[in-house]
Length: 407
Image (cartoon, rainbow, N blue to C red; front, side):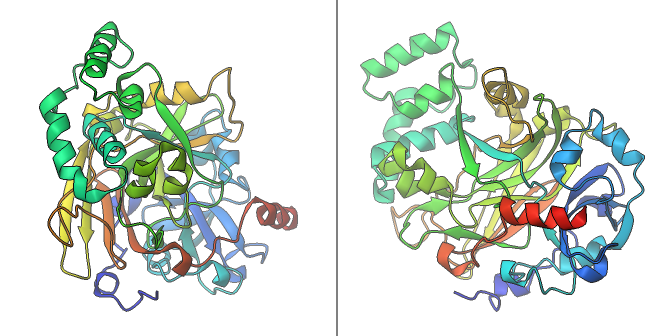
């Protein structure tokens, strides 16, 4: 379905979606640059830095984001890299509105934004907030039927309450709670990873497949219960050091995952289901991990049908720290030599009825989804069916051929 003429699109500008034109802080990402915008006349995906509203190409030093991730001190490395000016940030964002299609990559005459990650693994955490935990239990017990969700939600909250924030995952208190819940018949695999010793961590997307701000996110036509998941995404190097953060939308098909946890791959990894960006902000003297741990991430949904919904994640309520989650993934047991992007999970999923009573929330084509926090800006996407979004065709194989030309 072509949604270029929808009002949720035409009434929106990407121009003001990054804080103060990135005048403060260290901002990096990727852009597709046409032949006319590159020094060597070779079109392709380039590492960029944004400084005071100006976009600089960094291909002379970094051919991929993995090159930057591999630096011992990436901020210092960037400070000694001049880069080549390409365009203004406003121009880049204006060119990036969602209709930019992958099949146009080789023919576009203007630069536009890409997701700030390339060959890194893209992982995600589940049930890292109590509210998210309860919703996952509801999905499981409803077996994918949104009409049963309200009744089950009331029963579970009456049994275990809303507040498990004082419980430390994997602690002795948690084990005692686990035994009590089993006795009451409400234990779940989601409670196991939410308050047990092992976090839920899964592969969200293939390298190179994530989209960014201004593009369409995808849901399956067959899904009748789905939602956005507004999240912080952290970047980690091969050693497991956290080097920066950005925003993400971990698009989720609730009915698929609710029918069986074994359908997690189908519920989470589809065309346009991983949105990350707009840019990666590196940790420096102006921005630290503490800023992430204390921030509020807001979600706003605007539909063509007049529907509007909003909510927020309070990162201070996350049950496991970003570094703890990263350490569970990158360690002596499993290595990620190109680095990793990690969705940290969400505490907020819209639940209000949209179509009818007891129907719950689900997306409709044309929904505009905005995910924001002051120090990272706004990630905005529009909802469409996966098979109506242009196919993802530029993978690692083609990247290798492009890099051969660059050398």
